Image 1: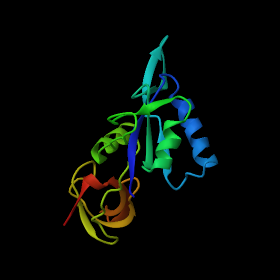
Image 2: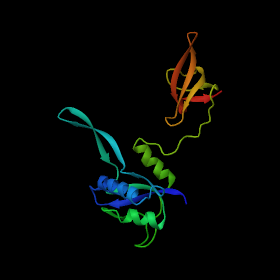
Image 3: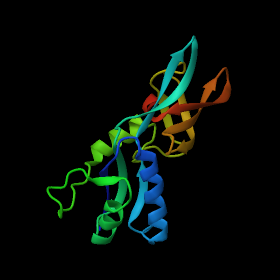
Image 4: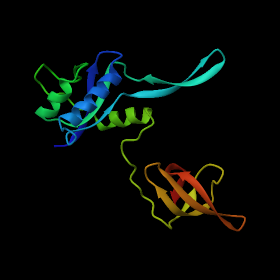
Length: 177
């Protein structure tokens, strides 16, 4: 059985309560091996009021919660019967199992929230020579000293004024020589 993301419909305004309730039920009903993550998709916005700006979280999909789970009869029952849940999105009828989100849909939602679902395939190696494509160090040649897959960044030592200088770059800013 593979884990997928599913969309759960809730009463509007109860998304965070459903998230809390479901997480408690997962622990109490020992479903941690079938239900992994519960997310309320939000994005940060800057709001200006009375000349002052502040950062606020806005729900991307009011009335919906995302659940990463392995779909079995037991896990389906636990989610469906959580207080505040009105049902799964994408199920054809009362007794049918829902359709999971496509990986591209999940990636887009998580990116919008500032989270990344999949790690980039790393095509770089330590001590490999690379050329900087863009930014203030464009056209410099450097050596990869550190690879941070989770942040999609590299630490590259470039030769500047006769000295090795560490520079942090995104994967997209460099190319292999």
